[in-house]
Amino acid sequence: MAKITYVEHDGTEHVVDVADGLSVMEGAVNNMIPGIDADCGGACACATCHVYVDEKFADKIEPKEDMEQTMLDFAPDVRETSRLSCQIKVSDAIDGMVVKMPESQH
Image (tube, rainbow, N blue to C red; front, side, top):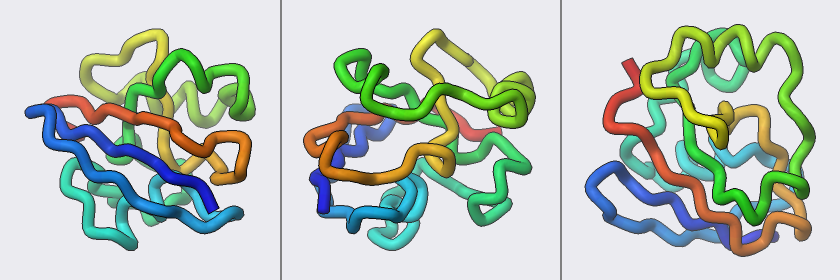
């Protein structure tokens, strides 16, 4: 189980425990965190679970695959730390991770 901090665009923080093996997106949806729409349900077929990952955790998660990068091309305000939260698997290695959400997912 990892503690993940989700930060809304306005700075509101939500700290939740997310079970190993789930995605960061599933942790948000299961805990009704606003700001992650997850329209495709985690199939990497949209970009509505776009987050900015704290740089301290960049080397603790799997690198982006081509499909994720393609979907991010459709997201607004993409940055170097942009990821699709459906593609980040939760494990003890990311305990304490902070993800920030963009102003809009559409």
